[in-house]
Image (cartoon, rainbow, N blue to C red):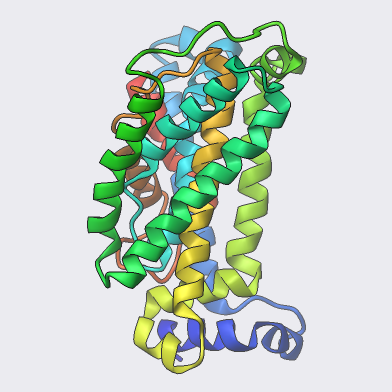
Length: 305
């Protein structure tokens, strides 16, 4: 059975197939695990290679700071994995990140409690992702072209909403900023959020019917559609997920920076894609690794440190 046939069959009969195999995973799914271990090994060797000549690099505070610097790219990469795995690309995440950040800052400045502004930010990200998918589908254009356009559109909207300036005068004594933007227990709260997202999305990609459909479409879109897999609906869901993880990054950035800067996020889309590729998600689609993408983002952060 080829990878394409396996992915399509898995998407169509995932629960029944697992039952026939005593709940065991398909053999083809072992490859992402090997890729993840390889990327994690590279990350460990890189950290050790820098830490030996520069021992201060291995200081706990420095390592946490380096990890924190990768959080926003990591979250975007978690959603990007699903898009790339089904041969789509979301280049709009940098602009969407800035726009969601501005929307959240404006709401808080206008008196909306920060904890209530967060759901609005998340919904905004989902809407942006759905818009990308609808335009891609209705105009029958590659998502690369569509999201390149919406990248500039979303950034422009963010700049217009912010009047080209940083949004400040936020209630920084609110628990949203002190807790979410802080480091309770000595570990940045954002790292716990990232860990939760990674665990959930790794399970979604590897163990759910949606994840199987994403991989099947990426392996062979025509075969997937012929087998009855809803390609359009899955595309909308995947790009909406990319928008959601981007909005999560924006909400955490708002808490950490305590301001809404419409110029943030420039180049984040390319870094997120690079993190996915380093982590074992090919541009050709068909497979992906959420854990690998985050490890890839951390490798980029370590190199830049």
